[in-house]
Amino acid sequence: MIFSGTTALAGIFGWPISHSRSPRLHGYWLQEHDIDGAYVALAAPPERIEDAFRGLSALGFRGANVTIPHKISALKACDTLDDVAARIGAVNTIIVQEDGSLLGRNTDAFGFLENLHQESDWRGDKGPAVVLGAGGAARAVCVALLDAGAPEVRITNRTDARAQALADEFGLTLVPWNDRADALDGAALVANATSLGMVGQPALELSVDALPKSALVHDIVYTPLETDLLARARARGNAVVDGLGMLLHQGRPGFEAWFGVSPAVTPALRKFVLES
Ligand code: NAP
Image (cartoon, rainbow, N blue to C red; front, side, top):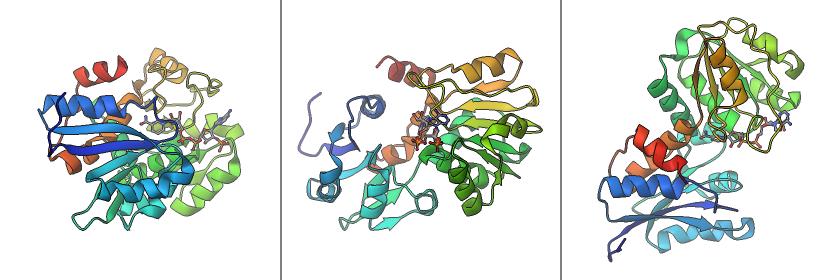
């Protein structure tokens, strides 16, 4: 790829960052739309991250994505926040404004909902939703479900106090971790937002016996694509959606803001990103 003097620049901050699939994702879209742009991995250690955010404008970057462990630092560094980022309490997308100031957005909730809408017939108002987990991803999932009109969001987490805090903040129903299987009774959606079931992590122990067969089962873990939870749910006849689409869809708003084109998530893109 040959860059010009007017190549539009964006990237992703993380520490470490070499494992990120985002350069491949945005690189695919840049090539697909024949855009004079570049999207690079930006390895910035926590003690330099504030300087790094401030450097975006000086270097002529249009913006950047932000991943672990910098999402809360990004929230503090941005001059303005969109409503969703403020509610989630983390920024994963920075857009450099014309005056050089930084707008912070969080597109994880968007990615979560767009993935479910593209891959299933689930709609928020179909019934109660169950969220497993109370970390950063779970916060985004809860905000998404509330915005989608879920009539009730039940939350359960190994550390009950973290789930309690989220329940208090967002008006959710707290279910003790030991009773998590009971939370599935009458649910229209269950979403795993813990790291359980991910390669290298313990399995998610969750009986799905109480879950209606009409419910959608979603796992935001995407390594492996078919987690044990999804395999067991699929085997008993539930519709399932894996987590890769959330990752791909969350990239769309940033790409559009930096490069001026609204990109699509297609089977060819999924295949390309998985090959990395
Ligand atoms: P996080 O903030 O570190 O939260 C981890 C969550 O997993 C917490 O709820 C934690 O419970 C729970 N957990 C970890 N180990 C556990 C164990 N042994 N038993 C029970 N619960 C356990 O991480 P995160 O950023 O929310 O990410 C969570 C997962 O989502 C990761 O696998 C990540 O890759 C995935 N993710 C996917 C996408 C996507 O686009 N598909 C986006 C973001 C994240 P405690 O509170 O008790 O520690």
